[in-house]
Length: 218
Length: 218
Image 1 (cartoon, rainbow over the protein chains, first blue to last red):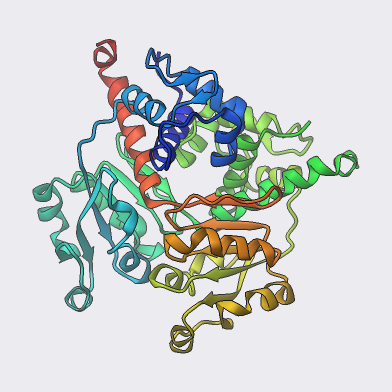
Image 2: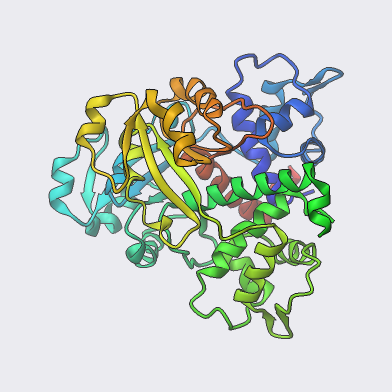
């Protein structure tokens, strides 16, 4: 049976967290996973049961991190195959990702950067080649790049995304403040500092209501 | 009835998207909301029904963006009250947020930055004061700062988060690659480029399986 999309997304994130465990063979309870992820232990147990896996990741003391992570990867059809990424827009934010430490040990490799400002490209230093934006159409297919990290100014976001789709990009991590419209088969993940703050505020509001139940009666 | 946390988080994000609508009074269908958000229209309809609101946001042609956003804000207990934020760690990434355009028009105000490197603070320019890290304990309560955007190197993440909690911070947007352990009542939202890529990869894998059903039978 197919796993519902939100569950697949949570499991994907959970696998990554489990793989960072310093004690990959020490069982963890769903309550501990709740603390780690912020999702309810009920949700976590339900997601894990959706794996319908015969793998031996469950003990009376909880789930074994390494085995559970492997079972998730298998079910979600992940391979260890490297996925190639590029950064598009080398302003302050894009430049900050040129030497992003989290890529090490992940299946993602940054292998190109693009910016419309040729002078800027000449000044910047990166462990991979940087190109003027007009060379995207030639370099993205040539390098086999699947994912783009979009860091251009908001007003250029949609037109740049359209170009990336033409170049064969399948997924865009959108750091701009614009909402993108993309054709079927191309996925976007919006990363927004303001959204992140909104999620925090929502959770804190929920907690406040929970701890003062009379407030919600008004 | 309380709204489940994942639904509250989706609704919070939906409200922000709706408020960006260029035509706030033109009804949108749940299918259009599916395209906008990436969540299934079924999930969206379920989340909205959990609002149990008497507000008039629903028409035969769909939901009215402005009215639905207002109903969400009311149910989640949002106020228009300003929340004050600080950036902690002014390396490449932290510096990129010093002039982050999305804060304009949001209920969040950046009002301080902190870094352990005093020389760096003297060089940087920001529209609000920057302080050496040792002054967090004095400045965070004084300025009434609730949220911190954590951009320090991974190995300093937990110790810095502990200090922020001591200073009264209630929510942390964690841009580091470390997983934080925080006391009850303090919330964290992890923002990770690698996680974002993982979510894209998971969605694309799901789509592939969907369009090639025989692959999942193996």
